Image 1 (spheres, rainbow, N blue to C red):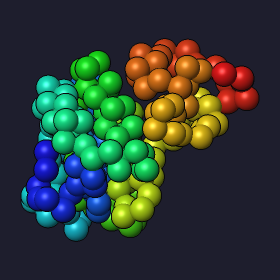
Image 2: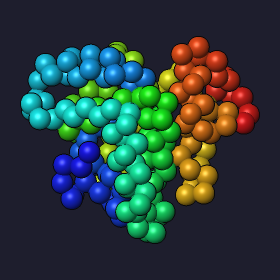
Image 3: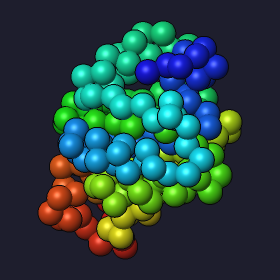
Image 4: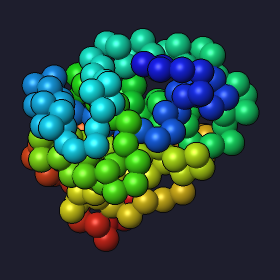
Length: 174
């Protein structure tokens, strides 16, 4: 997955200037890839596709290479969430895009069924796809992990419940 050594933070993949997008199926990811290929301003090599297996392999390698300092940020929690989705069969696009172009990329991806689209900045990783049934986010820590905004706070629950939209209302308690 890495394009260069500049895409890591404490040994964990952090593609600054990119949007990392997860899709429930390879077909959805490929359809979004085709749609994005016509997006003005995106270079031919700006879009990379990853299978579920490739993501699991990348995350496992990242976890092995991670520095203890990675616990100061959310990068490790995010790659663990990516692994959880990949184990459920999710496929990925990694798109080099910043600013308004990143927002357009996320909108196109959502039209093709994307579950998540995270814009990686130097200091902040921003979720670009919000779902109407998302619960309010709670604090994230290295021990608690990434908050998936589900009743349990686990990414697998978010992915498993999405198709039927079975999640609790936004004001429900966890």
